[in-house]
Image (cartoon, rainbow, N blue to C red; front, side, top):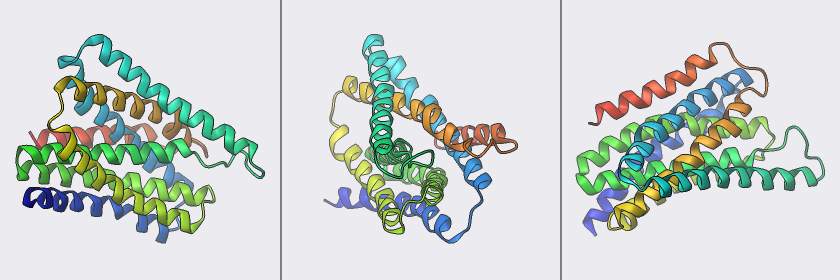
Length: 243
């Protein structure tokens, strides 16, 4: 029980850092260019998470056929989610070009669950490792929370639903940490690698099909490519610092 509470406390640090992006977006009147830039930065972090931390161990240690199939299924899952949510919104009265991208928000929440799971798995090694992972992922996830709330404001989502979304940020990080610590640590390596490949496909497809198009909705901001690359570089730096 004490070990469980310790992991919960470590995950709470990451959840709090992640949440800080939400009130910042609520209180600041953020112009579209800033939201677009933050989306580019968050997209870089997500690509780096999948490309540097998730996919390499899956490719090295998993069955090529299973890993490839899982990666494809993860991407297809996001496409289906976005497709059916868009169809539902298009059929609703008053929905049009400014319809809320459910896939975008769902993808960000999934990314936060993954962050939490990584914290939980890191904590199974040593509490210090879990704490370092929590700090680095919390700092990198705060821009994603900022992006989600700022985008929701821009797309006309009600304040009550934005508050619910902010609460879900915290819940997803904590739930992911508990999932990683209690459920995944004793599972077979083969199953964990398959899940990692599936999540990687989901995240990369989300970036290409939802986040980048959303960032460019109002016209691509200047130096957007640098911000995307900056997100990748920051995640790479944090990953190297934890080794």
